[in-house]
Image 1 (cartoon, rainbow, N blue to C red):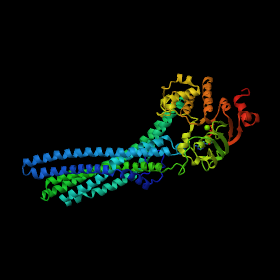
Image 2: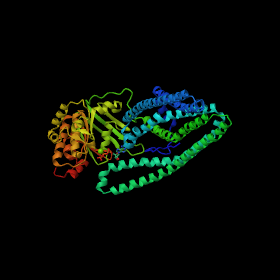
Image 3: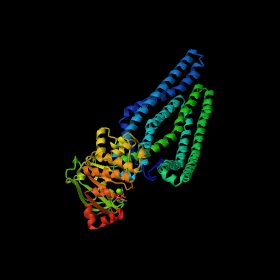
Image 4: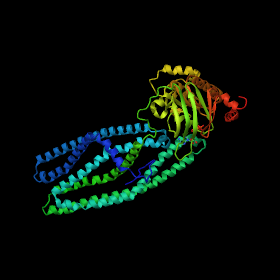
Length: 592
Ligand SMILES: Nc1ncnc2c1ncn2[C@@H]1O[C@H](COP(=O)(O)OP(=O)(O)OP(=O)(O)O)[C@@H](O)[C@H]1O
Ligand SMILES: [Mg+2]
């Protein structure tokens, strides 16, 4: 079997876990046995009706015509029409039933995958590209949809039809039926050879096919850079090369497929010719009626149909196993951060947030990113964190949210270890304004409420007033449309909105990771005012780059190489003449 199917992210040598995949597929179908069984009954009924048609032909040729019986002819015509109508009806019902059951199953599966993904840690998201997550929810589930709504049921039905047709043929003439039997092992061998030869070719085609969307996403995401550096022609050339490779791979597979099908297509007339020849002799010898020959020829078509269909099924089955494997792998992931059995619920911070000798590294084999970090932030106060880029500032705040766990030390809120708090309540109690601001498509108002429609507009207006930034929202009214990722706003404007959002969401503790962009004096003042007012109303940890922000904070913490170098008020640190004072003079000039 193929190990890899158009995969974006699966190691081709990775063994498919058939057991887990089977369990996933079985679980999905087991709660819907009823609807699928009904669909199967419709399909078998339609097939049996279809199989009856050659018998009607035999009746006309062998019974009605020789007897010159017009009534019998009329009867045959009537039965034929009714059979066909019933066949169409059952067919329709089967399609309807399968679509319903299949959609229901896929909707449930998609929900399960998504719900599960949302419980996973940031670690999972930072190590898995978005495109791949998308593929799990979208294309992998639709492969399984094809499996459940078509493949499985058709294969069972085809096998059943194969057996029925053989029995019917044998019951009319065993000798002639047995003469046809050798054709099928020949076909099976051909099929096996075909699969063996083309499997690696299909893998190559699918790999190439998966590269195209990945490449395009990358290029479109970076289109600004590409155009700025006039690299469009480069992209075109790479795309062309990719397409050419895909074209060559596809053509060679198609050649084999065509040869295979032509061989099978040739075996079908061979079998038919055998019926004409040997059956015809039997008729001449009086051992067989002409109607049986006609019937056999028609039945042969029924026998060959499933074989033509089989290669299509094979590819769906292979892809389904890869998809099922990938989905069950995701479903098996457990968040690394766990809650204890009876977590405490954090309603508010009454006292303080304490870091005590915290050590942290992202990977076991990597170095410490935080070394022995300690500080206390009393309720209602503010702490500005300063330091070189990559020093560990964002990491300090990520730990407070338990986006990651630390290895040594303690982080406590009002004396309670944050690992014994419920994750939901912890994160609900603390607000976050991230370094890279993300706005959702919708209005400015929607973004200020973070899509929570239960927040009254009045709270938004109050927050804006408290922060003293009414003027900004006159220029950018609350009903202004925000495009995807906030593309129609400048970085400074996005910052103002995200700060206001933190105020609207009304969490008592806030973590602000200030972006390092330079602003015009006007926006600078706006943001300074906004932050100053936030600091006045809340308990805040702010990763600061602006002097004005640092000066407004109650205490300043210098972080360098993952260590707390200095901790104190602005004046204390400045007086000490250490790292902070150097940093301060370097960045803001002597005169400030
Ligand atoms: N998810 C992650 N996995 C592994 N290493 C990480 C991860 N995030 C950050 N790091 C590493 O940890 C160190 C500290 O990163 P952090 O983001 O805390 O720095 P920072 O002080 O916030 O820097 P900046 O001022 O540039 O935002 C860096 O060396 C960084 O490469
Ligand atoms: Mg940072």
